[in-house]
Image (tube, rainbow, N blue to C red; front, top):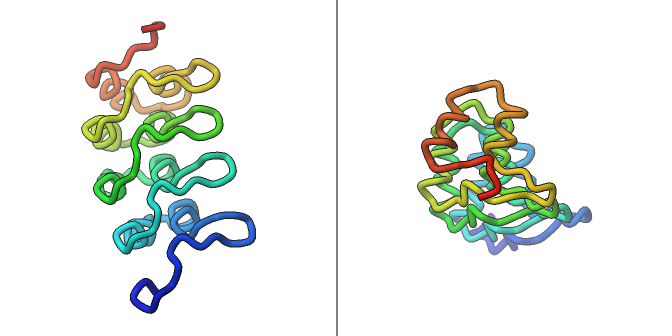
Length: 147
């Protein structure tokens, strides 16, 4: 499509760019990565501020997909309308600590807070049943204190 001149950043009637739809709806997220590599705005956000990286972080335990989006320019510290980052989404629902490491290695702020004052570590302790995820956050310097 890109070679044929398609606008990779065009939005559907709901205001969603193709990269957001691909990241949200495609189970393996490789379509989102292909769109990013072809020049789609990898930091496009929907009306709630969700980016492709956030959707992938929430649904895909494969750190290679996260790394590919980061390599294509995804902002690891981009926040949605509730102040949540991709690292927070990984912390809540992703079973793979390597996904945490990918975001941290790309510069994710491990102590960022959302609009309710919650950090990735706080979210992991509350939502994620995988202790390796909590250990990965602590190893990366995450704190649940007010620091």
